[in-house]
Length: 116
Image (cartoon, rainbow, N blue to C red; front, top):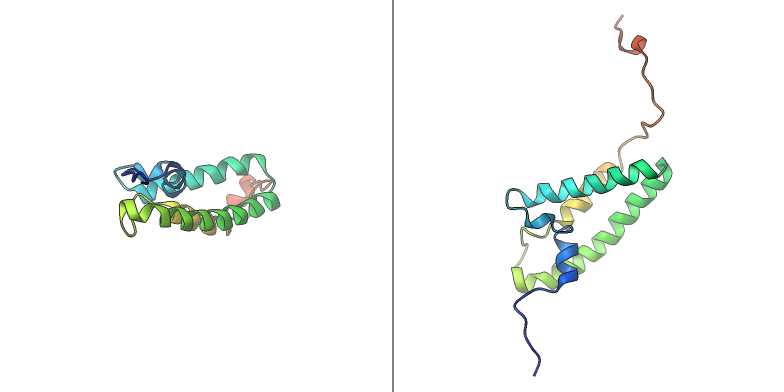
């Protein structure tokens, strides 16, 4: 006879909650967005612009697939559309960050701030 667990499996919890951000009690979606932004900014420091854009598209694709899988595994334990699942917020942030221009190397001189 199979053993029925009352705890959800660990890997879907890690993915679905955005590495645990979804457990933040005051605005789990916001916490997920902060984690996604922090990951992106970390990549920004080590990758050039084209590689960063490519990594962002890969993150969007992979986390959309993994998030869908993880949510399906978590719904029997947490119900439909659980607030702890924030991977969708993370993907949404990465989609928005695709619009960020390459500002590295842009330097403003004091003359740029003067008005006519």
